[in-house]
Image 1 (cartoon, helix red, strand yellow):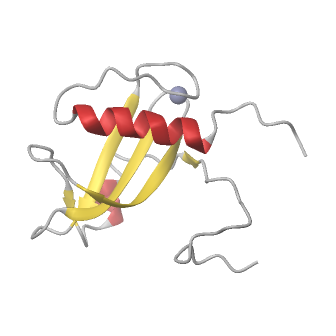
Image 2 (cartoon, rainbow, N blue to C red):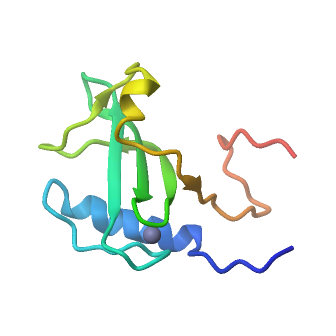
Length: 114
Ligand SMILES: [Zn+2]
């Protein structure tokens, strides 16, 4: 196995938390992976309750995470669930996903089955 010299999922989660807190303002958070001020976020959510998922990535190094369940803050634009990927893909690149570390205690809803 090659050594891992990229930011951990934990670091990404922290950056996401700080970024999310600042919305809809301009978050002063840099990429945990490369240090550039190039983080981006896009939400896909239900029009009714604004609950959905988020894509959080760096436009410079093209790494990021996927948040499976979140709420779109007031004042933040989002894609309504069901928006074709061609539309979302104009904004969101195919970035390299960072996954949470595999532990013995997988969350019950992880869907993983070794
Ligand atoms: Zn980066």
